[in-house]
Length: 283
Image (cartoon, rainbow, N blue to C red):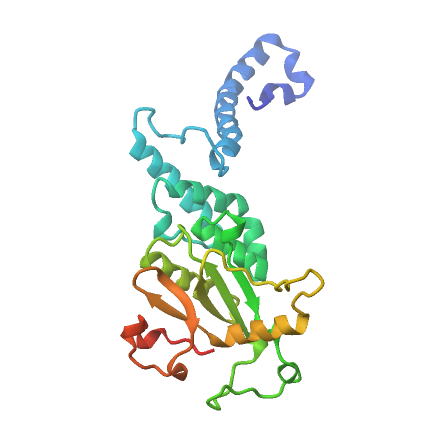
């Protein structure tokens, strides 16, 4: 839609039009400024179509015969500039033609994401956007340990593990259960997931990342009869046991999976089970 523009001459006092010949001369000079202003206004009117993440306008100043590579490079540079307004640098995994879709989605949702990313749901939304997770069944589950704390932990009583070592306070811990899916096809993607958690999790939290099967569900179990479900206390006990026992193990066949702690958390070389000494995560 063309932008509306009013000629400068129409804003002059009526006295300027009293002498027709003189007014035409003034109007002729002002027409040069009108032409320049119209050009500026047309460029401004294109901004929503160009600077919008959903923009479809041809990049200003780019020759129409520039070619696909030049077009993608210009659009990518624009997205980089817009992301810089948020102090964000797109990760290398997004710097592909296919990554343009994820960049545009980030720019469309950036204001809301940046406002909410310090919250549990905002953090999970940010993680899903980063790795292109859209299926509800593939969304990670963030468990905040304080919601499953024991009475002693809620009272502030120091807690220790079976080896007598002090445990971190539950309100400073969380576990992110991430279903294995096509979003994490290789070790590089899983390593990137760990780095995203480390960098963007709330600074006061110690967040552990655990890989789980795609059918992993963390909810209360139903008993053999509908009238005999798992009680709330039984559910809390089971979740607490899970949070204590899980540790990330590396399977060379299926990638990472959760498994029980071995060697009581000691940094023992156990390549026979696929775990490296540096992969130990205490329960």
